[in-house]
Length: 185
Image 1 (cartoon, rainbow, N blue to C red):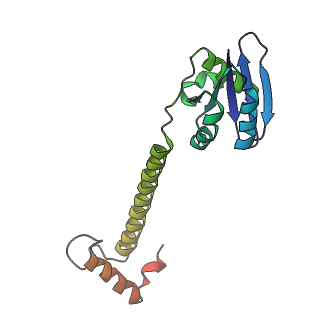
Image 2: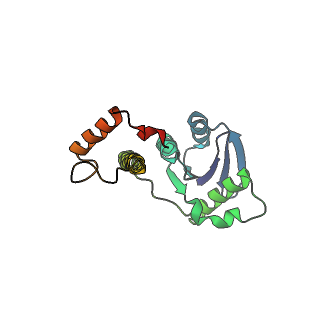
């Protein structure tokens, strides 16, 4: 016997729908915290019954996945961009969304995303963070260069690139000399 559980998560509450063959659907609403989710899932476990969980991908999906993996037999993380037909219906609420995920999972039609392990997710997050920092550094350099050019400094004092050491020293000297570089912004 299998239980298919769909979670509709938001910041204020979690709505769960339990779909079991030959039984009425069970709905329950509880807090958005992991402890409430764990309690609900553990209450659904019964001997000889497998519990399968599905929820949509979100910013906290990795954390929720890691926190709940030991409470269920399998977790499927749904891809909402491949379930656009759900959002086209006139009737839409948390209970309907949770039920649709559970039903789709029960017939093996739920579009899912691959959930890599925690180490891979952390590595990817670090790469993305570095990319963002590098982008911001580039923006700051471009703004500094634009300020210098607005004051008539089209080329750095020394040959070569703007950001080599000798030209950074030249920029420091310009700043210390009391030029009105920073008044124009």
